Image (cartoon, rainbow, N blue to C red; front, side, top):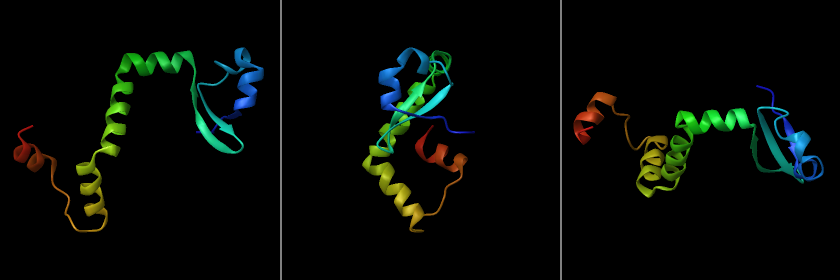
Length: 93
């Protein structure tokens, strides 16, 4: 996928033209990431599909101490991966 880069200045000067031009646009300011601009079509899809809730859950897990520790143990080879069936049985899910 080709990245569509725009600047925050472009948004300020031509907001009507910028919105909806591309499905996903990466917003930069002084060559630093400021955010991502989504078209109305993409935004509607994200809201209807439940993807927004999944993203929010992933962001929560990135800040969860236990999750971060578990990932770091695995990366440092201090823990072994567990099969999904075993995980479900262990945690009753």
